[in-house]
Image: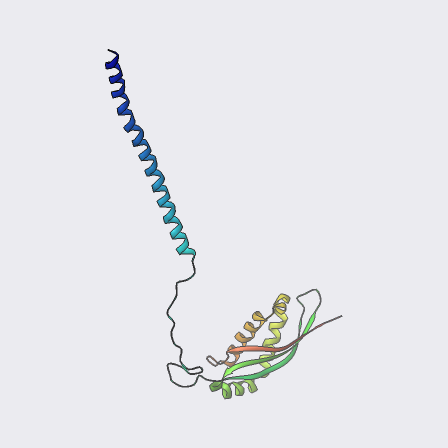
Length: 180
């Protein structure tokens, strides 16, 4: 009878072993799937944060030529517009600014631009003086004077009434004088 009990215990122990191997298999599957998901996340992150993909280079035409027309691009001409003095009283102390203002104009508009400039010089001075008087003092502290240049360009185009006449406004000289 002892042998029969031993056989029964042995038979009962055998079904228990597959349960352990099924559990280990399930844990191994879960760990494997988590690792696979992590690998996919890493690949996606690397691709999204890596630099831009290489692009094909395109050959540029010879320098200075317009590809559409096959002719040289229009030359730019610098024309001095006015030299003026204007007071800005927006800060704690009034500051007088002495400026020289020029414009970069396409060569095809040069003659027309100069004619309008001769007729409307005082109007241009008046508008530029208004801009300086109304400007925030911080505009004059900008390294490139971008705000003041943009305002000058807008007024200049409005006075000139020539389409695409002004490419850029230059301020080659600006000297502030504090009133003591």
